[in-house]
Amino acid sequence: MPYYVYAVKPFAQLEKLAEFDAFKDASAHAKALRQAPQVDTATRIKVMFADTPLAAEDLLLQVRPPGPSGDE
Image 1 (spheres, rainbow, N blue to C red):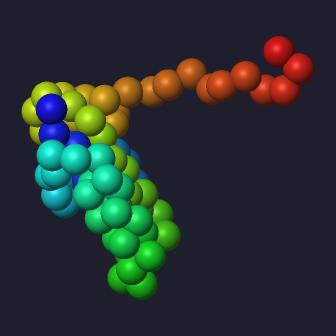
Image 2: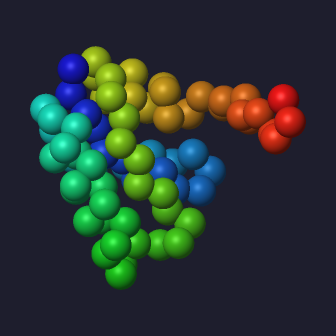
Image 3: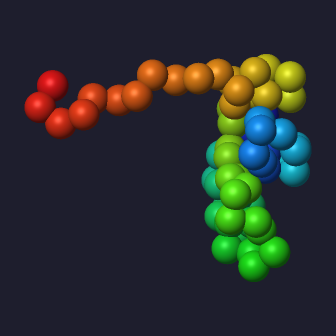
């Protein structure tokens, strides 16, 4: 399964930026994009592991419950 790099913009707008076979390459690309000065502060760069771009977008749009908050 490939790794997809996405720009996640406000109002759940997704833009596929790249696709890689190895996590190391996808992670390095995402880190470089995050450091780029032209990236809007409201845009998040995310790496997603999925079968297809559609599956990656579905995973990116899912609302996840918050993690434990301290003394749990």
